Length: 272
Image (cartoon, rainbow, N blue to C red; front, side, top):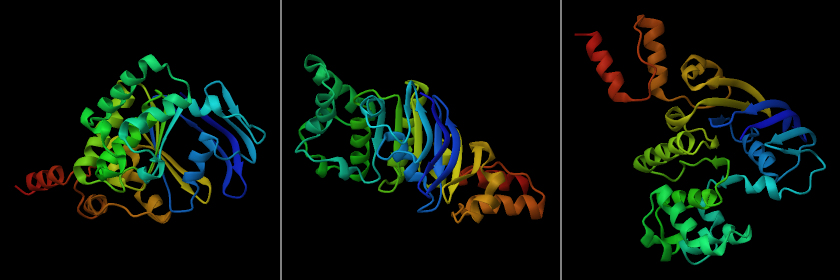
């Protein structure tokens, strides 16, 4: 599902933004704390209304006077930075059932939908009876995504999804999001400053600063825009700074990668 911002402003925090989040793509929004990236997700989900302009989501249009967001929220799954913020029942099964019941999902298909959502994110069915608060950080993140996906939304938004994850869980999450895009054709928006993760999953990268779009690039252009990203106040992975330094000062062309093994092999081959 395409999401289009047309001259959208929110107070003095988002300023005259025009941008289209493309259907069936993973767009990563980066920016310092307070840059406005979280407000963009709130505008999409109808948690706040734009002060000016319109947001078009499928056949629905949001403006400053919109009051009914039921149809919009039905199509959007939101995963919070801290998964526990959305847990409030005694079992994984109850968490998964809550939204389905809220939107009057057919009761005779409820159990199948719950099981399908759990399988999709790779959690064992035995977890249905467990407390969501007893899960590990990676498992909580997977459950949060399963809850968001239970209603089969067309759009999935994730706020800083790697904060509480170890390396294996981050890789598992990257594989899951790519599968959701390629196999299930989801439009995915990720709010993160985790440069290693965005390199794994992104199609497009959007840099926000002071409520304005400062950079709109494809993932492949990330390393070519390091200076602009650094000026925005964000930290750049040391491996990318090293690659840039070598290219500029040693005139050696290296693969633009965050994979240290690839980099070591290329340097070894260069000095054979």
